Image 1 (tube, helix red, strand yellow):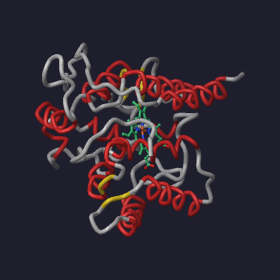
Image 2 (tube, helix red, strand yellow):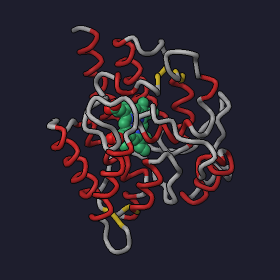
Image 3 (tube, helix red, strand yellow):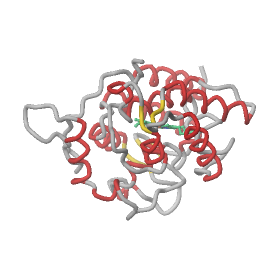
Length: 253
Ligand code: HEM
């Protein structure tokens, strides 16, 4: 099996682990802040959100612009915490240690197992392309993550390496028309729009791409509420902390 095939298989396996194992209790070995507010009790999503804003005030406002070279909205959001700044290099993109990603991601509700495994698979895929260094993910080269990266994104052009305002606006406009009178969306609305992007580009939807729809849905509280808010999708796709947060994983409904 060559290295690229191995990376593809790893990617598939990694995505399979994004299951409902989320647990936000984290430790700050590398400077990340624990989002658990009271020792011994699991914080509510509202407390978790308030704690995140207290720790990283820039994620809920416009003080720090998003980095359009980061194609994953979750990592665009994490980058705005400032915690990736020490991983910047002069050339070659922001290469973030997998341990930092898993700790920080778990503060945002993605379990270390889920996000750590995906980060490991992305790193492996990038290593085959020479776009990262061992043990790191180049968050500015996610398109090179063999096994997980795909075309027909919600926010980028086919083959694009940066967020495209045109594609993102198109996605959001379509979602707006699908939202109900209270601005709520169902998982199938997200899927519909994802398929529209793929059809437009003549690209077969990948399992990784479809799972990303579930990640949006669950991160925006879909598993708890049965719907998500259109306004929160707007926030998330612009790398701002949504008002309602859940735990990213597989959708239950
Ligand atoms: C640490 C774990 C993660 C890694 C390493 C990662 C990496 C990636 C990669 C490689 C892509 C594909 C980029 C491309 O095709 O060019 C992507 C896209 C995406 N990711 Fe992540 N991701 C992670 C966690 C998450 C989480 C937890 C969420 C949701 C809360 C998320 C939401 C998305 C979405 C929605 C897209 C598609 C963006 C679009 O279609 O425009 N990711 N991510």
